[in-house]
Image (cartoon, rainbow over all chains, first blue to last red; front, side, top):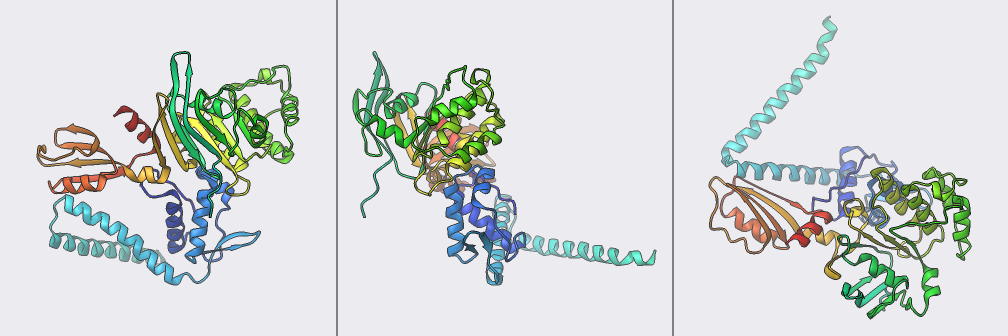
Length: 141
Length: 297
């Protein structure tokens, strides 16, 4: 799990860390039972205040995402399925919102926009199917 | 609950060199456990203020307190509680790094030998080297080792990274985070004066921007990045009748607009949206950009 801070996002630094850990948990970049980086090296690597990392971890713990084992560090909690579903949706909504705003600026009407989404879903489905067929095909060689 | 004694409290500080006023009516408060940025251009009055905290200068007017103590009257107590990396580091040139650190440790009640060893290795400093033969970067590193090892409750850094190369600057900041911030949370307070703001950005909890001896802006760093926004908009036709008076700065180029907002971002965005922009984007200003926007407007 590689974290990155963006000072231009307008979001408090500790919340950026909270969001990225949740996203890593949702995407599988961080698996249940896996350790989070310890505070000191992570703070040094990101060059942010140790207290900021500590605050992010405290927040994640109170959200039930991670647990602290004394003397051993912080770990992603087991049983994150509810969170994963919720976070996945949140992440997707963020991207969808950006595209919707972009469509508005480019003055693409609603019907055309929805049609375009359907079209892209089909195109990508076709691509995936072609890829899978191709994978099975080599047996004939 | 009574709030804890501030680590640093400066009230209406005035200091002049002859007729040249360096600090004019400056006030600021640093709470325990914070990393406090003290930003300003060269000659803004940062070093003069810091010297008043260390009793290297006596305030001509106003009051300075460190841990509630008066540095002019309780100098030894104050110096016991803080360590300091000056902008110009000077050691006895004939002493080795080892002798210099032992000499400086002899003034301290406490000295963490293990931290010293770790930092010497980290900076790849040769203990046998005479300090007169060290580079500027290495001298600053020795000064940081000497400032971290006593494990004081307050670390004062005065332009610590000016004139150092980018690698040394990074290592310096990483060492401050790793070695100094190691202690009990809420007990390690940092005051860092600098005009190289971007490299300290992630470390700063709160800052005061000083210009011509006056505090022009004091803000929490997260709040500052939320309040200061850069907004870019592009229109089909050059817009003429948009009220942008609440913007800190406006740049126009044909059909494009770039605004700097201080708190009025949402309102300006709403107003721009009413004119159906072809594109409208926003981002936060970094602390360095806030510094520039504030001092140039």
